[in-house]
Length: 520
Image 1 (cartoon, rainbow, N blue to C red):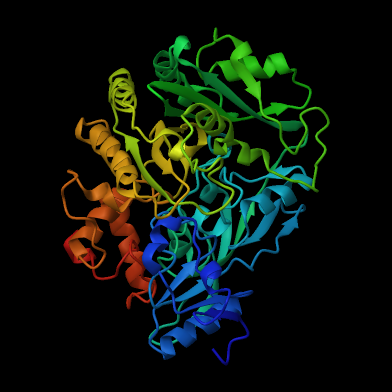
Image 2 (cartoon, helix red, strand yellow):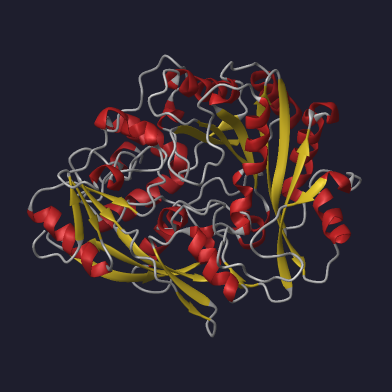
């Protein structure tokens, strides 16, 4: 890339193995997903230059902001990775209440900078995730019920797109200019479909006079976790919007535990008792508040002072460390133990996501969850596995975006995390996730898939079916329908045809021009 002033790491570099790393180490086994080069861009002009180089040299490329794509679509064999992680200098404008965030900025830095000004945006709950992929996929997080999905706060974006037949151009998109259809497409369709997003401008929310409080409720067997989950199903999505909560069911030996966590935006002078009484309503107004605990975090509940020296965002406190440590302390003594955190660094893992169908019997749904998860998987503390249920409702349902499932009360994720990429039980871990997904789907409880937490297997109705093949157009259409359903998919394919008719921006689960005839 002689004409591009970017840092390039190729296979001859001693930094190559570290540079090709993504969040899911399982996918890198046996030197899979080995790009030819990683190009670290620091500006939109850098991105444009690398794209031109790829086009002129007939090279395929992938786009990576944080590397958290759970199926690895941000990389591939023999491609050039356009990495935006060095594009991370934020600009906060307190007069317009907006913030410009380059796409490679990690959420830890987003929250840290905004906290200095008593501001927030509805980002995600994992510090190491970059804003680019999060926002384009919709973005659920600890403020979603109060402020909507991450993409709902988007005001404008800068994106590098195809410029006719040859070359690329940098454009600014918003909901009023000539690119308003492209702008809306960036809100929930997932990254890498239309171009390379280099920065995003968000409206911010003021926290003056308010405080963020992270809480958790941990229920043990003797306290009837299934009963508590049923009550959470009944009340969490109907509670006051200032509370966004989630629940996790996880096996511990031959028993199950339930962990409920979240964040509440409270008034600064609210007492601990007042706050806990509000939180109790996600279970029941009469729920005993002594079970509700507050998390320690960088922004002190007492004096709201920022500890910048050793900053861990309060938002990151929903990443499950409390319940994970509970698992590890009690699930046998096998070595190596599963990761103590899922946000600290890359780990091998498998994730699947879906949504409850409308009108299901939530008591029967909870029964099915507990019936499967009560079975001892036999992995001891080698595996962190759990079902995570994210509370929705509130402002989420009002979003003007391409997140199809915005009207659901909950989003669900099955997650399994372990330490060794070449663990001999890898396939068994994958089967645990797949079998739970099939169990809930085939009993008629669930449907769809969240584009931020993709699972290529979600198109499979039976475990023995062939795996997803991205080169098979029928498979790709089936997967896209899981993300967007037919109405949204048709809209997005029209926009894809308009801005990328040659499919220059293509990856294993991206939209693809030429599909419209198969749907209309």
